Amino acid sequence: MPKLDLHAFVSRGANTGELLFPHQHEDGTYVVSKTRFEADYIRMKSKPDILQWLEKGYSLRMSNPANGITAPSLITPESIYRPVIM
Image (tube, rainbow, N blue to C red; front, side, top):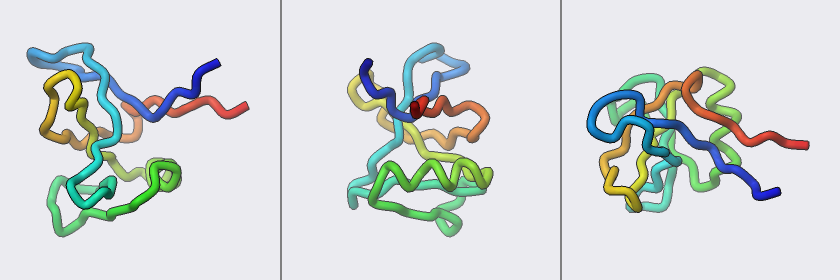
């Protein structure tokens, strides 16, 4: 069975239904935050570290450049699907 990564779906607009994945910024980091403001960003280098922040209620910047969604959206933890660990 393939390992599924953290993902979400675009909920409105022209890209409704498209998949979103954790957005990797130019410096190689992923960003979680409680607000949309850059001053509140918490940056991390490793995708596995993201899950613990989602469990604390932080939102995650997500995008899908392969499908033309290059601007990272801030997605709430309730809207993010997590991998099933067995």
